[in-house]
Length: 626
Image (cartoon, rainbow, N blue to C red; front, side, top):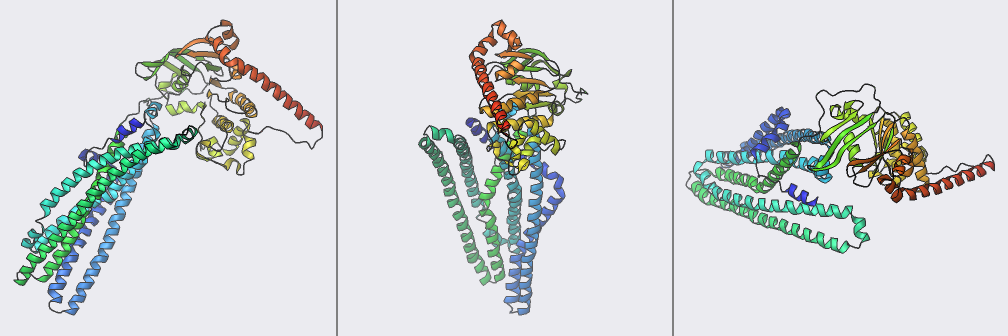
């Protein structure tokens, strides 16, 4: 996974790619009126930058030299008015630009999120969560920075530089040529700087990817690292990567430390040359002193955009890299789509049929081989077998999270490929071994904020799942906050919440990955009771881990190496003496003995409860808690 992250971050592209820029600009097309306003005010702001030095020239040559105090007052007011006008124009230009960029990036984030929702599970198997989050959040924010300070700022800088050059040549072309003599050398140095900056940027991105991956791995595996005493080793490994990152950034600092002072030197030399050559022209009465004053201000304003070159270049470079990664994501088509005219079963009964189903996650490596079976409405079918045999692949194919290669999966007489995916999945209830709980409150985790599930239906589902007593003891009851992934709840509580969720949505077909192996005896009894309630009047495909579930199933399918090796009832399969019988001997006999002990414990608890109740009406119930 780490290697994938490194390869992914090598997509840096060019510092400027016209193809990518044209595609980025499409997101700004709906807001072209705002862009027109922004561009107009950008030109007006450039005009105010050019007007200020010219007003100074007029004040010196026309009023100060003639000791015209009234005229000087007018010039001063004109200069202040120009400054205030420039502030207003810059405010409007900045606001419209930022507003447009935020709207465009909002649209882009929604497009990425919608695109991710359409992807099949194989896509998420190939792409780590961290990478997808980076595309949706960080890379889009980088593009937003391009619009807010990059492209617009670059256009503003270019317009100011060219505007000042034209103003100086118009005012006094010989003096203007003298002031622009250093520009070819500055452009050459800028090109050299950009080349070095790009090398440093590429290297820093690769090392930063390693730094992020290593940090994420260390935080996620903190328990394992501490348990095996590997803190020192992990510290040294992180230190090596951190040193490399520091060193490459210091190279960038050195380039900046050389480039910016050189620009300052050129600015000072240009002003010195201006004073020497222009001063001679003033002495010879060829030009007036106000021209020299205006040119000094023009030179200072012209070199400021050149100083900003490094920042603008880095922003443009990062934005091109981010846009290439974003568009690579958006150009990945959804492999599992809806049919143009999906079919509808009408009244849903919950009948499932697999006909010679083959499925591969990797070409040439099938995980399901010719799977065929039929589940009648309301029938409970258990899937048993060794880990990796193909049990989870069967339920994934039924929900069309992966598309099969050959054969057909038919639900209520309709091939799953002819169903609308969302309509099909609304009839399927998944209760998986790894229960996923969202950040939010308990109510939101039961209803998933579906407006079709009202409060009464939610409470009834919690009651039937035997989780209501626990919830009602909480300070905020159904409004109690659930931390990330339900970290504040026990395994049993999370499992019962998942049962309540399934009961609230009331699916006709239940897909169950039973998980009761890591809970205490009391909680397991609650889960078993809730499970019986959940299975009532539903078609069920159950990846079975507990003997009680297997023995109560209508039929058992023994899955081995992607094939159905045996099927039948519990007693029939034991009588055959085949694979199921061996699995039973290895795995389930201990559970059977354990179940007998639990039954005896439960009977003892019941007897105690009866004795306690016989002592008087004031005796309290000893209902087990989760």
